[in-house]
Length: 566
Image 1 (cartoon, helix red, strand yellow):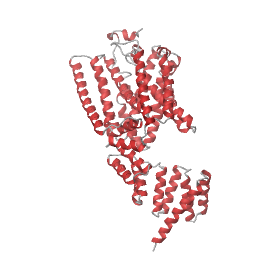
Image 2 (cartoon, rainbow, N blue to C red):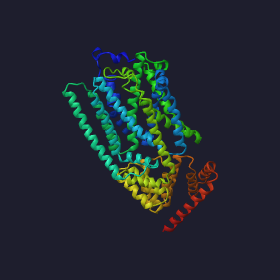
Image 3 (cartoon, rainbow, N blue to C red):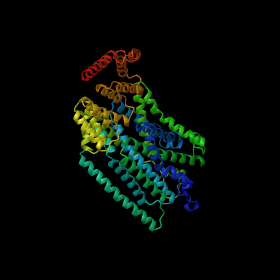
Image 4 (cartoon, helix red, strand yellow):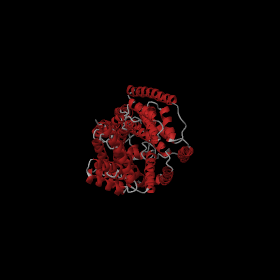
């Protein structure tokens, strides 16, 4: 039976254009990017982008799955309606994700990234439809144009970002997808830009048509879509920082999602449409909002457990759980919040238009979608298992496909160094990444190591220092810098560098060994014995070899210094 709120005539109730209220909607739905972007830009000046991303992905990206899962398994009526989906999906998901995790395959990651893009644009589309419905606009042409504009803007933003595109292409090649030429990707990008331009003009023309004919429309929707387009342009294209840009998108997405879920459930509580747990949690109370956020954070903490378990088997299981959680979140959100559903519309305060009593797709159609997804994952898994490409091969293919990506050149430079293939090639690609605007520490680290191996110690030191300026927490770069300045005969500077290594990692045996030998040469036997004892305690099997290595290097450096002294 349809909700009474849906069946009442539009004139029977005063119509509000807002989901909650004007200032709350502006703060939490419309202008959210204008708050999040400056906040994260400021945070990036205080913390590493990797740390910001880790916090966002832990407590936001994973944590915000909790409300959807709570509704799926806490709403009795919804569970009865979709019982088979809610039982079969997690079982199938954990089996698929565990297999891909154990086999270290990337197919699931690729699917989840592409599905995540779809998920974000569908959330924006959903808000657009809610705001139009609030204004009384149920025009089918407008609905289709909303979808087309969201799709084209999101996809064009991803395609126009060389580094984001390079990441997707990398995962595709790792998963066994055949190579795509740069010209094809350029053609796809141009097609996306032209399509976005055409759809935007069509969209604006339709808006003018509605206004000219006196039909209802939502100005709030226009603001939402304009601000979202700006956010995508800024985070994915202008910023040129994959890690920070994705963090910005994720925070905006999470705030909007958590707010709309709270509003939805709070309205259901007020209309006496829910059971005990939902009624308890989603009461209009500051304490309950705090508890709600706490549950989200607690669920996200699963990622912290993964990083702190020593058992490899348990870690694989937890990684599979996280991947399954992502899959279920994207899947469940595709039907449990459908605005076309009569009760969903009632809980959002949407009146008028044609509502259906169910959002369920015909069983065979729904099953067919799962079959398609299964075939895609099967194809990717088989292709990757049979692939004979090395990671360097993949890196070279990505550079050929996306030649203007700093990330692609950095990845290839790192592989050339790791495999000791070509120091000159590694330097060329690392410098190309820097020329293309890379703000990563990795190109400078690669150049520093390559220059050092080629005997260009002054240039090596300069590159290592630049790398550490960008990311001071690199243990091995700090150690390599210490080695380079030691080779230059700057023993005091080298000792300081090795002490820095121990500040970053107190159990780095090689740094203790070098300090032990250095203090011995400086005549400080007490400190020499202290560091030798610590090294022996940490790694008794390697300490002798490392002390011999340090002794040989100090002998060589001191002999060279004596030979050059007058």
